[in-house]
Length: 390
Image (tube, rainbow, N blue to C red):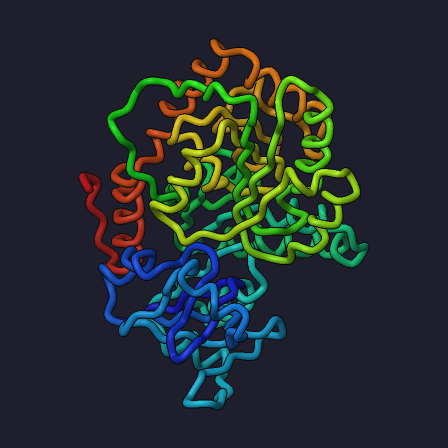
């Protein structure tokens, strides 16, 4: 059996191996390959440049023998890499030749594949990992904002027509993008393995405070909000606050913004592969922030909570499903962000209580719990075999 998986994610080819700068390591595909023989990934595929190739140890190896990676463009054109050339494929034939189809939304490529499946009256499943309305309405360009209602309506239509939907939130996305299927489920993208540690973390005694933020370097993640907040925090002489960002993307504009606020020495941007290196990095943080302008259910926030980090986040997507209301701010409110971070750091009791609450909440997203949900979901869709006891 063959499965077609469609999304806008950027994959990179280097010496006939496919890499992802974030997520989608080889183990990610197990959720599908447990049930099928062959998987086709249709997404954005680029040749990795020499500069990037030096960072391969920090990227995730995505390719496996059972997987074929296809290059897609935002105009719906599909290409198959053969040796050094790309052979043009028909979207219609691609959908026809796969028994099962999964589209990961929001994504333009996912939309093309889903609409073709609908045209062919072919069943497909949706993994809804974010809100396209929030994603496009928060763009600075007028064209982006105008595109928001189009993507919103198209996503509603596609989700409504899907056979099954996997939502990453508990409630938020389900209310906005409805599907009446009986076998839908909710399961975050996160893969954490909780320890038996049930004791809240204590803040270190140093007056140097490390603030953590994980996310792609884009306007969506509210990095500008974080830098402005950092500037306010460092007006206080009691502590020195450093902002540590883990993510890929264009650094230049954020380095420029940090320089504008005289925070260049207080900001660090780096990349790490998923898994243990991320947890080790988080263990060196004192507090975590998620000042996003749009989200599904942020994996980085859940990972931080699982390590006992107190956290502050915005009132978007599924973030309010994770944090107590007292740690939620409006998007863009850098002043309130600074106030809450300082309160957490300066109040030992609040710090410990928040740490404990976050560990307990994150335990709901333990790998074993979510993996059972995913196994049930994909088994039903791919094999039409549903076992309530899985």
